[in-house]
Length: 100
Image (cartoon, rainbow, N blue to C red; front, side):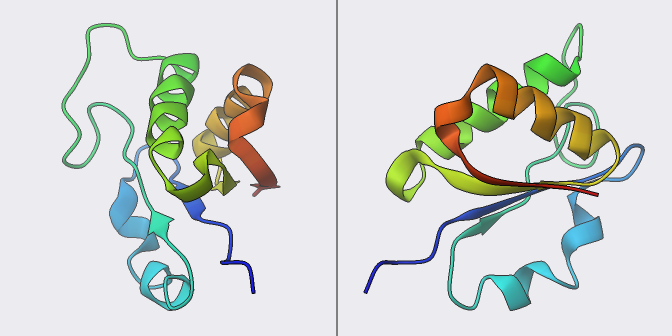
């Protein structure tokens, strides 16, 4: 039986990945779940010129290191913009897309 697709949860601005703390462990019961943080938010170090496209590229690199190199991606608000950018810039990394 194939393993479930990994899941990436992208948070809204100005929050951080802690937004997903109540649900991520439940979703991780049968799949890898990652909750990256936008540069400068939460524990993520700031970058000189943060951008949605830049964050999408960072997430694509993270997905490339995951099992299968693809993930279902869920983005909320600003996370949704980053998810759209990820799908446009790195379509091979996106197995499914949820925009909320």
